[in-house]
Length: 146
Image 1 (cartoon, rainbow, N blue to C red):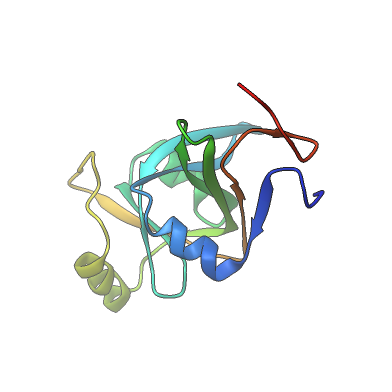
Image 2: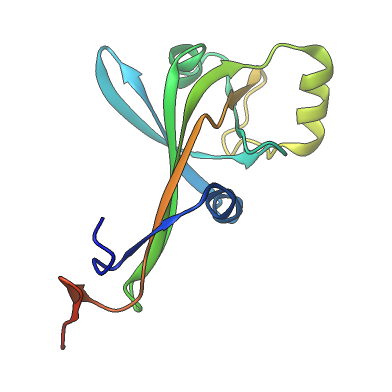
């Protein structure tokens, strides 16, 4: 990216800090060889892994176990024309380890659509990228009036 294009690349630590402030993100996975996107509430583990809690019977839970997925969250301030976006890419797995499940029960957010057969999906943060749109409209580094 050009240094004056209005965007700033974010480092991994800053991406994870911002991600922790977002209540909702989007899970991106493959459905019948096409991209699928669903909004989800989530939490972050201490290592930056994205944690989702969903019904074991849900289509996303069945589709993502063992697959490489992306997870995106953002925040936008339309009045200031500013915001940020963070993408975590990594392998998703249904958590099955007993002690790990008990730990996640205590720390992970509740599903907004609770189900009696919930599972935890963990997305390992293999690649974490983000960028911030700096406030104010610009084109080619030149402020726009209006």
